[in-house]
Image (tube, rainbow, N blue to C red; front, side):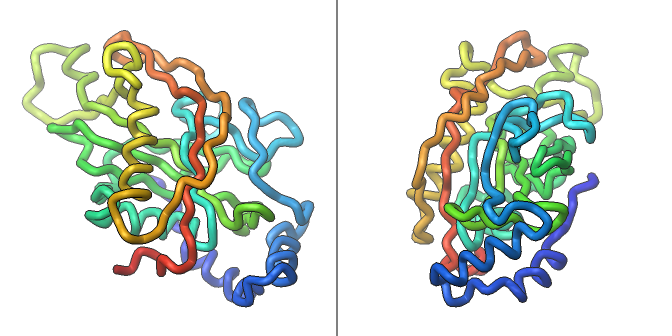
Length: 259
């Protein structure tokens, strides 16, 4: 796996971020620093196909040229702790769903501020081998040329593509079952398993983060991103998102998931 680890680099940059005061002056200065080399209003601004003038694409991609759509983005974590290492740490906790597997899934890419970026990390609540009926997400923190992006409305943010899937493709296409473990996941189709794996994943993660723990996450905004492209799965079923993106808060009071 080629998952990037940008935690140390980002922590060094955060040392000079004037956020401690939390006031309007501090936040404004932070926005200016984060956008060094670009507009101080660098922010979440999305469009499918990432045309000029837009900062993020609404899908993940299967290759480093960001040309082949794979999964719809359906969660954005926002706030002072909306950093990929904290998303991972919180998701691993039992009261957040126990997303403790990080290795058994393919690499995907996110388009952000003019660059096709390898995902920061991935998390799942089960391994990718049998019995692989699981919830799985890939996520990437927004940045500009490696510097974490500070959105003037939301603060830091990390985009995530979440879904429910099953490891069945190899056996559907190559019966009988082989004597060795293989991968081949398919997202639940909307028709045979409504509301479909993309929507199921978003709701499952939101439920754990928002309702089943004392940390104070909140679903502050439901935004229609319109990313409803259909994806044909190995069983012949189509899976698609309803196009909704949930903003989930990661406030600084959470302490980075250290409990």
